[in-house]
Length: 410
Image (cartoon, rainbow, N blue to C red; front, side, top):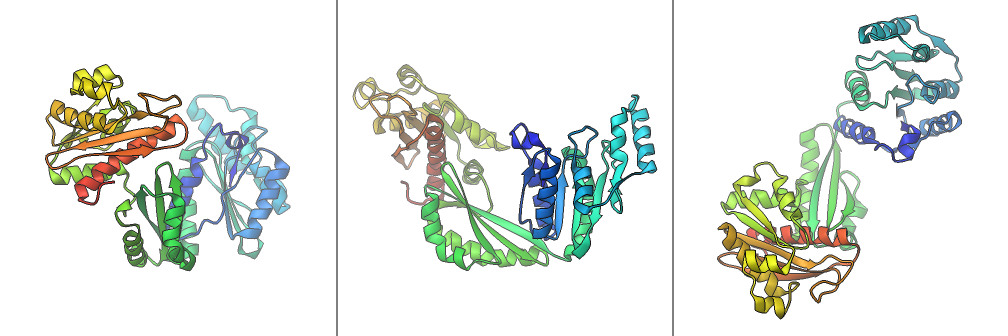
């Protein structure tokens, strides 16, 4: 549970929730809910009460600072119906910290020495805000830590995760993610529906994003090895059903897969990019060590650049045009020749919102040229400009992946 109006306004991202969830999964603790509440005492108390009715352990981040809108301490006291008491040892710690900072301590910081009666504190190494631990009736437990990530992580690693690991017993939660290209979420769900409906441990979930669908498989067991053993047969079955649309079983990005395949084959790639403006090359070079298999991209945004740099014929430019199969094929062969590489990849199209080269918005041609293949495919992508470009990038990388894996080209 995150406390802070700035989270609700979108002024900062709640990265703490992701960090905490990942660490809890590693020790076998199931995370059932994430919630964010603003800096309002009544609402924080309400959310705390509701959370403790639903789960055994509540983790709260934020609202432990010295200012008047830092209300987590007060809310916990109200929720537990106990008074606050000032801890002299915390006050002394605060004064020592400010002396070490070489600054006078504002009186407002003394609020951080106030603790709800009967609750433990977690002394901070970083920052000035102590954490709080409340052991409540019915075996419930509440932890409150600062919202500053470094301070939160210190208390989680030093105190909270070890305590929860003891409570949870020997267990871990392991996830494995398969990624697929060229299939929509509904089609993937249709192909896996019986696995999803029968899933418990391991479980199946779908995560869709532009131009790809992730299938996340999650298992809980006594240790990593047992969890991985539970996942393996399910992962094999999901991969079998998705067929050549599945490009990884280990949550790799498509550019990582392409890089791995290029390195293994000993071949080098170069790109000719029009509508994507170099973004395919940027994705490829985001992978460490890409210089071993990638020579570069030629950004040829105009017809003149396509003709003068890549040798696209004037007949093609005047005839089928810059958004055509012929142009994509000539661009791919031209960039292969320009860089002296084994594989040339090209992208040309109309990203929108206006038509381009006689083609409507969302029209994309992708070309591939090598010693044994000269191939082009067309895409029709609906939506805004960025979506067209992203689909084009993904389809181009997937074309290379399919070629290197020797599966049918679309």
